[in-house]
Image (cartoon, rainbow over all chains, first blue to last red; front, side, top):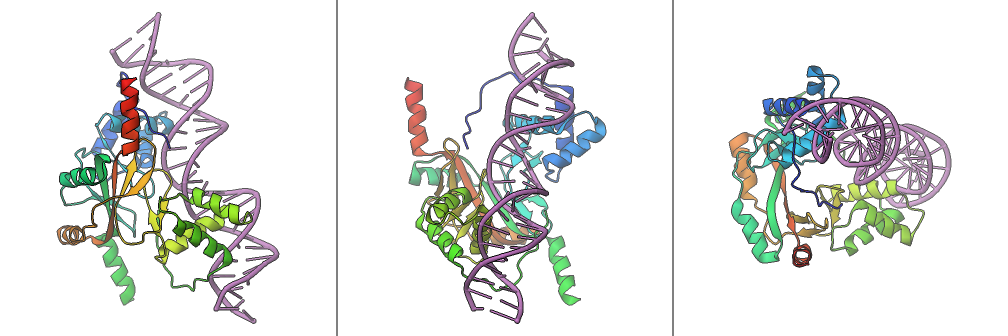
Length: 141
Length: 141
DNA sequence: ATGGGTGCAAAGTGTTTGCAAGTAT
DNA sequence: ATACTTGCAAACACTTTGCACCCAT
């Protein structure tokens, strides 16, 4: 449960890290580490899962990509600014939510609780349009 | 990744389920399944982890307790209304956040995206007052 | 040259599940 | 009587890690 990382160590750019970053950035659909691993593998099959996890962690620590924490496997997002996500409980797909990050609420929580808020994460749960359509078709059948 | 549960099956109250519910409700500090298992074990050491996980899932499905999804192990909350949580990145403790659930934003997301929002989950990340104090002491030393 | 990075496989964490026996309704 | 529940252990999903070698700086 401990965290306590964040040492100012020198981060090196390697061939594998560059490939991982490129693959992650080419996506606009919140891939999982596994999906990224599969694509990276297709480019260079010698790159290991461990490296993909390590590099994705490092790249999100340094702000090059965003680490999205949702139920199920974590996702990664090339859009790095703070924003919210929607996850479909039908198919598991993750989307960016079309509402702005509310900065004010972080201050409000701090003032009311003394909890030093760094950020918040919001995930909307529901059915994506695709799955709504499918469930309607099923009812009619 | 599939979900697709929710059959209207008859749920039975058993001795073990009652103990698990009592233990969960006695907590106001967001215990993990493991913590609940340990306490339940102290009451009846024959109750298994599997049963604790199964029953906690069932009890939160039926709305008797709340399933809180945060980084790390999931938590359970005896406060069942929709509300937000704060997790301390220092010590991992979870608290209820002192701000109200925003119902409006669910509608807004639906209108802008067609995503049928059932609810959203917000988790504030930061340092709890306790950990702020500790990190100050460390700096002074 | 040197300290971070890599591949590999093993281990870790948190949770789910198949099965045969038990029990609430 | 029926069908949901249980305990157990094994399996599972996802992620981290120890180690010996490698390579960017």
